[in-house]
Length: 176
Image 1 (cartoon, helix red, strand yellow):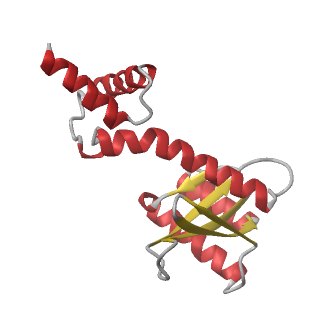
Image 2 (image 1 turned 60 degrees about the vertical axis):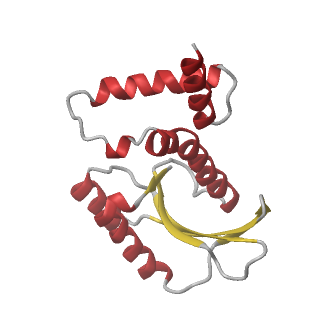
């Protein structure tokens, strides 16, 4: 399963248009709701099997072979003490798996698993180490390798949060 962000603009829009043509304004195929960490999160899923025309288009235009199904997930969050939604995002998902279409519960588990990886790994690179702002092309890979090593060492020291480990390492250095 893959998840498309806004950086895949054209493909994302093509799939959303295709999905709206199939589903129109229909209710979601599945809806999940969680109340945790002082907030309410609602996830709604719509998906369809990719017809031969959409599959051929994705392969021809974007080099994505064997897309079997695609859909969108709308996630809305708000603190429990508020009535208006604080964040809302629409994410396009797609799958190339053989076999039957995923069940709503499977799709929910897969997308949540994707965001777990996204939040544990890529968020650290993007926010803590600001990799998206790094434009050093020739030294980008070695710097990335050093950052990965630093993250691994911080986690081996037992820190759950990377910024805490960085602060502790800076504190030890200044005391020495």
